[in-house]
View 1 (cartoon, rainbow, N blue to C red):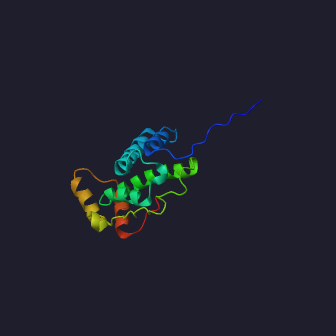
View 2: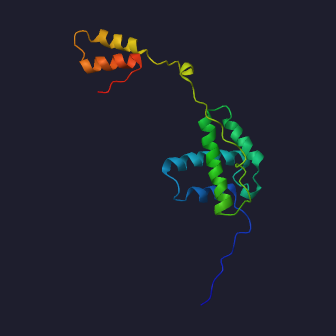
View 3: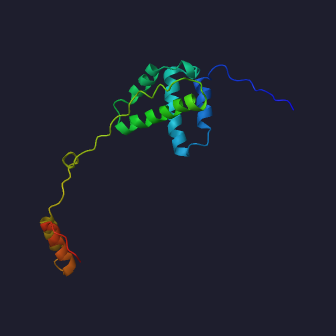
Length: 160
């Protein structure tokens, strides 16, 4: 029995070919595939579809991510994650490039808004009890609910 050796690729494919191979894998759901394709299309617009994957630089990737610099943090991080996944596959899965050019680009921190920034404040329990009672004067409140509202206002909890 003889063994046939298949020729190995001596160079990395173009960005267009690598993108096609990356996206055809079964690793993605339809929504992820569409989002990743949009990000990789933007990369191809930036560097050219015929650019060899092994010739792309971290500066080119940074230039692309600068497109989303003024956008929401989650938008920037989503595009960064797509590029991180693609180049990670090029490194680990295919060995076309030695390092991931996105690995040193940190994700942006998602800043949580405080209640004051959102314009929301907790409703005072006494006010809530008064308002609830004022709207329903025609219907008596169940005693357990009235006790619970009083307990909320005083900071105590009922053992009922």
